[in-house]
Figure 1 (cartoon, each protein chain N blue to C red):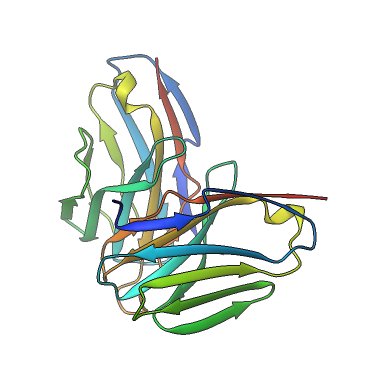
Figure 2 (figure 1 turned 30 degrees about the vertical axis):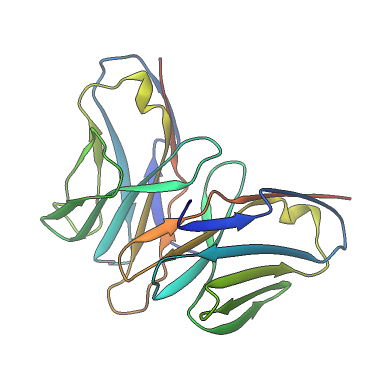
Length: 113
Length: 107
């Protein structure tokens, strides 16, 4: 079982609020990813990181930002939430040296009113 | 046209039936992943394969690199297999996901 955690699991918040979605993994993985998934749709990569102080934008444009100050922690921040940000956000990680398998967190389901 | 396509989109089965979910992709890949997503949203990695066939319990995944096609089979299906099954193809760092196949297995 993968040790990758996301908090909160569910969040309902008003427009304009700043929010941070937390993702932590205890496996020492260098590579971490954030995906966005709208209901019934495929996952899209919005951010990824190769290691500490490394962050890159993914294929899907996102107004969110990320940081990677510690290996185990990869938080995602929305400075001003909007209803269009309502979605599920999934965090994943993978080791650099042991193949391509990604381990996924349980996800955060965000609703912006 | 999506770079990763799955069929069928929805699938219902009676307990005990043999199930096949198909995935076709048009991108170059280093590996093909099969994932399972339960109603709560969390995703579990079932298989990662780059050639041939893998088996885990009642689940079997196959891939044909030349035809760019993979299948996920479930033998003796059970209601607890009900979930969305997602195919993802990609290179070392990035995955492209299919929209998933929603499977419901009834007792």
